[in-house]
Amino acid sequence: MSYQYPSNLQSTYCANLHQHCETVGRVVHVVNLDPAAEEFNYPVAVDIRELISLEDVMEEMHFGPNGALIYCMEYLEENLDDWLSEQLEDYIDDDYLVFDCPGQIELYSHIPVLRTFVDQLKIWDFQVCAVYLLDCQFVSDMAKYISGCLASLSAMVQLELPHINVLTKLDLMDDKKGIKKFLDPDTRLLLADLNEQMAPRFSKLNHALAELVDDYSMVNFIPLDIRKEKSIEYLLAHIDNTIQFGEDADVKVKEMDPDFTASNVAEDDSGF
Image 1 (tube, helix red, strand yellow):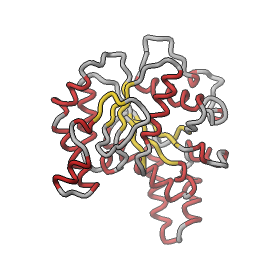
Image 2 (cartoon, helix red, strand yellow; image 1 turned 120 degrees about the vertical axis):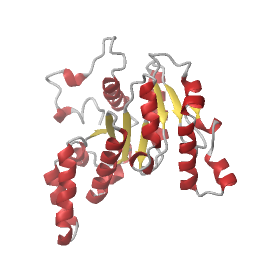
Image 3 (cartoon, rainbow, N blue to C red; image 1 turned 60 degrees about the horizontal axis):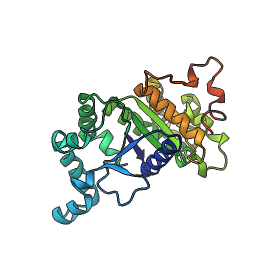
């Protein structure tokens, strides 16, 4: 499953992932779980809008966009055993499904709808991981980057899934070298940058936030440049390894190579 903070551009990720897999002869089925979606750049295998749509809820229930989205997702939760199980019953063990989810972070950090959804997938014997997409604009401001890390951490705790964090839109960045420190963050450097940017009265808060990220030691990012096939391939290898997809096949993940170190990831296999 994939989602993005702060917007819903995860559909672009799904489209590029599908295109890459099609190019290399790999079959991927994309499931749309965003009731507000309007158009797609990939074939939709299953579409939540056949069950319920945001537009219909707003019109009939007189809800605003956020209230209507929550209503739609709770309606999906109520119909997991009926509608969704029927939609997924034809997919066999080796089928690879990508769930294109809404981008609103509260669905992952505050409301239990998607936790119920992923728990149901596990009951149906799906191997599941979450792909969290953070816009690279967040690295331009340390406070925004920390907020992105905390949003990721909140979703990780709520969903209790293997989690892959991705820094997206690197194709739009001029200075790619400058983001290396954000891929596997050193909290001491983050804290120093925060204290430089903010008033002294926030120093204790900054220390507590940096300590929180450091205590979990789970927030790091994979860079993604959608223009480069190697970058998509590198990310896909991480996802495959996380869910043990094709574990009976001869899977090759370069992280197992002793000569493969973190220092050359960004310039070599990630395509970054």
